[in-house]
Length: 326
Ligand SMILES: Nc1nc2c(ncn2[C@@H]2O[C@H](COP(=O)(O)OP(=O)(O)OP(=O)(O)O)[C@@H](O)[C@H]2O)c(=O)[nH]1
Ligand SMILES: [Mg+2]
Image (tube, rainbow, N blue to C red):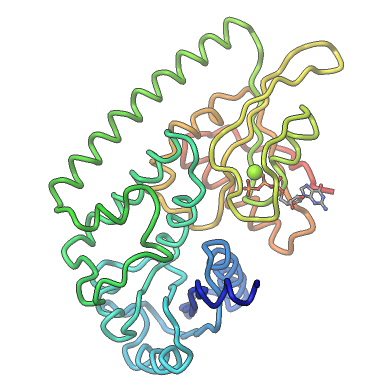
């Protein structure tokens, strides 16, 4: 039965491509590609291969060298690859040129992360934020409409929110929609501020759990407060914040918030779109930084979390003691 199901709905075959700059390290690229593979699997794909090129600098038109791209394209054609995913952000022109060479869908890390967020968003606010980030990413790419790809719609990077139908609309309507969402999010933001001042009247301090995705944040919320937030071995299992009351042994009450995890190279547009949610983090009196110390890249993950905290305006993060997932 299982085999039948997978025959009916074939898993998208994904090929990953990374560029090793002469200035960078092979180890860093390896780790980044491993994480990209996890992202591709989380999005529902099956990674069937990868290609790496060493270069002084990215090539303007095709990101990797055009000859190398042709070479990888032959491998992909032979392996029936549906989607090629680049580990770095591609410009709209690079994506277009690469799709002409690969004759299949070409995505970058940003589109992959946006796709996962699109699949995960549950609340109205979460969906609005993801849609905003998707539309802002889409806007400069609107001229081509994937027309040269015989409109093979759906699949990784092509779904979530209103994404697919927006592909059929024109720039102006997308821009209008972006403005509408920004207005709606502003309303949400004001409501949050009101809720916060309500809480402040209660004099319950707010503590926020932050950390890299899959570090164990929701598990910590659950074990401290008896909450039943979804905790699973997946990237971005949590998207929408959950706040629970925690009664300390001193009988004091604290509000504990669990929220979206961070990742290296988190798209800037996504951070912008999630600002309202992440404001909770910045407003907290205490941040609990959860780290999976058993992870080989724990140190890089701590640095990535601190970088995002810095980006959302949280400056007092120095001196946080990481809590180990043990
Ligand atoms: N061994 C071990 N596993 C843990 C611990 N805490 C969490 N896990 C596991 O790690 C995985 C991720 O846990 P989550 O609590 O979902 O992690 P998260 O940080 O909320 O992840 P996202 O919401 O996806 O960003 C789950 O499979 C947990 O069971 C721990 O202390 N020890
Ligand atoms: Mg979680």
